[in-house]
Length: 346
Image 1 (tube, one colour):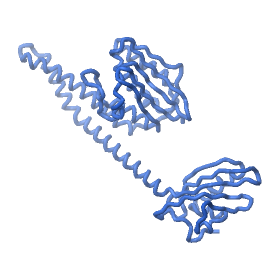
Image 2 (image 1 turned 135 degrees about the horizontal axis):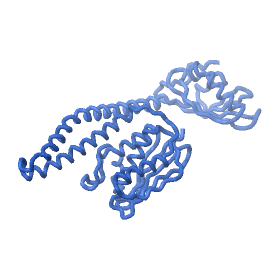
Image 3 (image 1 turned 45 degrees about the vertical axis):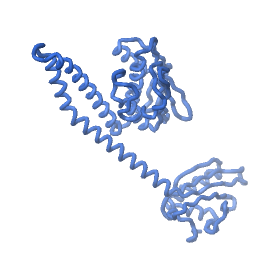
Image 4 (image 1 turned 120 degrees about the vertical axis):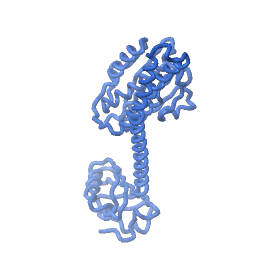
């Protein structure tokens, strides 16, 4: 039995939402609350006819499965009149007395708005990536020239330059090196969206110990590093290594003034995900400005105190987002900081 013209139209301005009860033994469908159009959708076949013909067999199989075995489901289906219907169903009762309760809801507008937001976000991200990539390449050649000629002047005979000029040249060289690092970081940020994901199991604890050993050698100071025996995450090995590299490098940098620097890597499995953290006893940050931490080119400490481009944590955020995860931080001034990220395990 096909529903009459009074059946719901997902294209209508007023989206509909209603509960129904299906009795498999009789095939009867009752609605809560009642409404004129629902009088024509009073059996199993007319309930199926609310969705597009191409998916009716799938919906029928799903409903019959929970009618026979119990359980529940919630799925989006294309509507018979266009748009998107969400159908939810759950079994109640036992055996012959079992009934199936459900809900049907028009999600056409909501799904369209979600798609529009995703497209806008993708466009904005692509625009930023293109800008960062172009700027990085365009600036690299003149930057090398500035740095190179400055170093040549520094190596010239002492009498050929005034004393003041010779004092400024090292600053110029240092500034070009900082700019070069910034360009490298911007390029890395721009490439993250283009990198192909090759997910696999990665032991973050073992990876963390390797990075910590390199950082100890580079900084020529001993930092106590604690990590569990194993910390397995699911993700792209190269991207996860870059993520840990940025977080641990920051921890080493900001514990520079600590009398007994300590960095901890840990994690716990919860709700189908791995929640990891990197904790240090360094200078911390003012939590009032914590929302700026993961924004590109934002710094909470003076460049004179701690070197850096202000891009590293943006790279961390982008990597976590590419893994459909979450990232955050907590801390206080002179009381250390904790950076955490949550990665799905599948």
